[in-house]
Image (tube, rainbow, N blue to C red; front, side, top):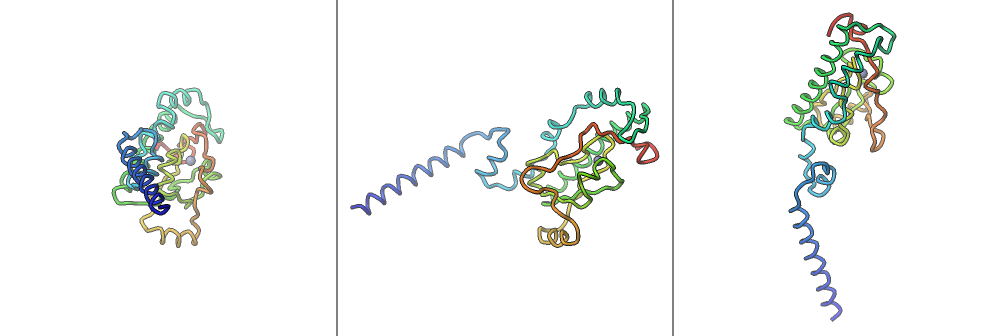
Length: 206
Ligand SMILES: [Zn+2]
């Protein structure tokens, strides 16, 4: 008798569990509950959503940048900013943002899981924050779109796709590439207002 009652109780629990799952899946997805959706559905492909809109929401608007630059008289190294520098810095910021986003969007099409920070040109502001070769996972980018460069005006830091597997990334890690994250939260990043004049680092317009 006890066995039957236990069996019935287990059955009831199972029915409720199935109902719960069905009802839960029937709910429309809330726009800001990406992490929850991953958790519930276990669908990894949700990570492959472009971080474009989330990044834009975190970054200063063009008007805000223009206003800031109009009032800035010199860059972080004390070099005076010309009006041509200001225009170049805004163009560079937009171009670098677009390039990094497109790199991630292209990486999603080919299933890139790892990205690493690279410096095609030296970035004196980012240097103390991010080492060349520090790598992040696509999931970390999904959860923290603020880790996508550029980090500040005149930033030369870029995210590059790692074309190998997790295994090759770990092997590469032994050769000097290390994870950027040390836990769940991202390490500190430079302030966007840390201006580096492009003419100062490139010797000309960029
Ligand atoms: Zn930088």
